[in-house]
Image (cartoon, rainbow over all chains, first blue to last red; front, side, top):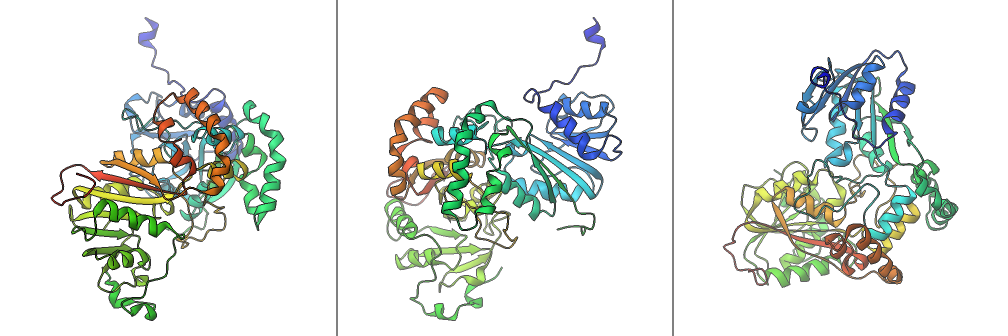
Length: 247
Length: 262
């Protein structure tokens, strides 16, 4: 009976440990008393949105299926993120894109939209599977598929739940920069145990780059220890406070 | 719409028989040319669009092969230097400036790795193609063993490099590393069906890695089973090939005679 009376609780669909990490990380990035309006884009049922709401943040949400969103007193609008973000120019202080971009084809257009809806000085926080880990590199070598990417051949593949865009940190960095956002931080949520085994290769990665390429420094960013071992790629970027209105 | 012929930048290419500068790797154009001759036939009467033509080195080749109806489009049509062929200004990530169902073949040679939003591009292609029309595109094959080893050691697949210093106007940077199945998904989402994929030639450096072949097949079979993930994504062509060519088709019956297709 109490089940019928109590409101439905949002169910977290992310990997265990991920939401906990993101919550702490966002609190550290934005500060515990942050009063800006935060959009959880691609919120799903709203499990993460509820966490931040309980931290005292002002939240709004959007999703392709807003009907399944079930966090009380948080507005959730319908949004097809490949078409745009249904908010006005410079109306949000932060946009979260957690595990969204790997599902979309036109990431650059989405970042341009984020730039548009953010106030100057506003934040974009993004997470996606890290395909640069040792585990992912091994998987790509042996099967042609990165970590967290599966075959898409089957006619029955549901485009919404499948990962279709495998970008590494620098491909995100480029699109962020081109849309006018400034990349602030790159991190990972936790180190994969299965990637630890690859640590014996790690010195050779750097040796390889040093031997074969003219400007080894640019190549080493892609091969940093955090990305070689990490499970998720987490990026934060800001709209510069002196940004002109549109790109 | 800019007419290329009126705005040539490079006067030496005004001579009718000069080949415009070739920016593609040696061998790619030969390969696509022989593929077109084999599948379309010499003197194929349909309209062929060379999208992202650059100076038009490949358009020029087709003109030499006497394909009668050639058109081209590019971000920078002022570079285009083939006499007698129209080149329109187009940002193909937004729109292909032709009417619905007006083209028989759309070529995208070494274009898709430079741009974002391929679903939009493929949808546009679907729109401008006549029923039974074809999209033929080439892109570096990042599934070769050479490319996989390069990704293992550097985090970049074959023919991709760090983008940290890339300037916004840099049209040369490769930014979108997709594998065969990610292309096929986008084609399917736009209404095009992949008819055929192949590669131009075998990389010698990938041949060295062929000893990994049993391991690759055993591992892929173990985690994905005997599906297309095994037979397509890890086929010998994909493991050894340098440039991937995909031939996709819009549904419907073409009014033209296609030597190999019908």
